[in-house]
Length: 596
Image (cartoon, rainbow, N blue to C red; front, side, top):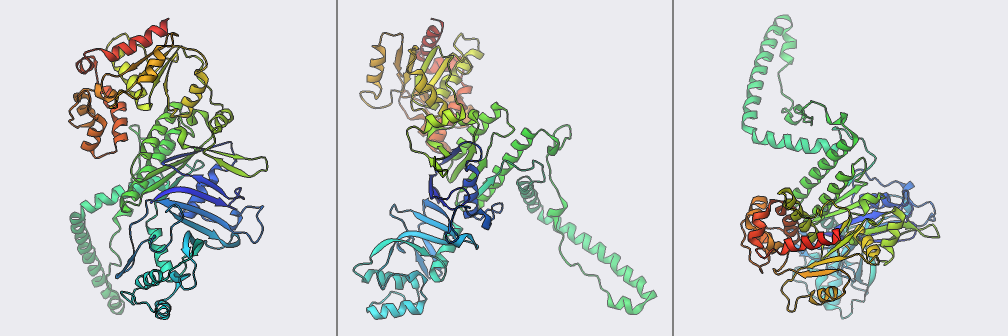
């Protein structure tokens, strides 16, 4: 199941109902104390995370005594079937438990802000006289309704069969939006099934001690010890028998000597092993460096990086053991105590994780250096309106501008030449190619580090690119456009290239002669980095072929090619794949405008 939307009402600062769209990667951005962490805590309460216990004081202080606290999660990718018992299967659709969009909207409601929180489904549900409330009826009551209507079920012992017979007989179920309780009978069974299939929610907080005694540290280490012990079961059983035999021998000899002092006491005593040894408690695994400095004595940034890694390891273990339920990683302020270089690597890692099947990432931040690296479509701006109510903006055309202004994300004013490409993978390709050529002494511009060169994906993939795009387009700097030819005829970007080349302002545009940048890779570079053999022509879909060979998504393959395989390229391999010298010509055109 995949989380699509979160709705919060009367939970802490969220008095009025707020709806938040959740994607594969969702970044909550806003000023301090505006309500970002509350979103993560609300999810923790909904998913029964051990660190997010609901307390009556979580109710919004401005809500009236009679108002409820409501946390609603809307899911897609629903289970195909639900097993009520050994003889009854059903679906959420057949039970009319889906909303108008065909999704599952599940609310956890704390009546008047108290109690343990009951679950309800918000759905388009039957409300006619004989159909309403059937999920909560006993078998005998359903039989009575069926008999009254004169319908026969395929199996009168099955509540599912009886309900479907009743639904099928009625001409008008009077389907209406309702909040349906799942408190008893088959409703309770369906709820248990749904809860067992929810994604695992893993929360990593910012304000936590960073020692190797943390649960996220110890749990994966315990798993490692447990797996090692399982592999040594036979040897450990043999040791256990030897210890038992030797200990019993000593105990029996002790009783023999005791009988010489007090025969009655010796008769009352007998040697008994009360429990098998708990090997897991014998071994305690920790991490230290080569200099034997334990992790809790290292710098806060190092400790936090290790903890995040342990957090990911534990959540990944749960994901693997949960039969494909998926996992939602919620990370509060991942940038805390990190150098900007590590912040960049963290974001790249989180973006990579968000592209995995069954994995969603939520994070909070108010740091411009982190926010500017995030994809625009992932941004959610958390703010308070003029009335003091929290709002979360994800659709407004002004959102990026507001976020950039609030956080102080500034455009790069050092630009001398702007290189426009289609997307971020093209940026990675050009940066990588320029580096491997420079490493061999080839005189090409340093696309990765020269601040005078701005590589700009026209899609505005990150907040930084969006800001640069809006700032640089009015500066009149010379531009070099490089677009993929792809397969369409005429090429998709042919007219755009013609327009740029006709400007007469020093700008120039190119269409690749091959299908796309990945067709300039040498197969040896791909094999060395990804351990896969693929054939490369000028027109085949290289990312798709790599994805098929590795059983990964095509976008993941594209990322791996442009972030990993590109650094296995060299001058000879590029010249073999690009005898016409296209790539070298692009770099020369960039360099000439940089010097001009």
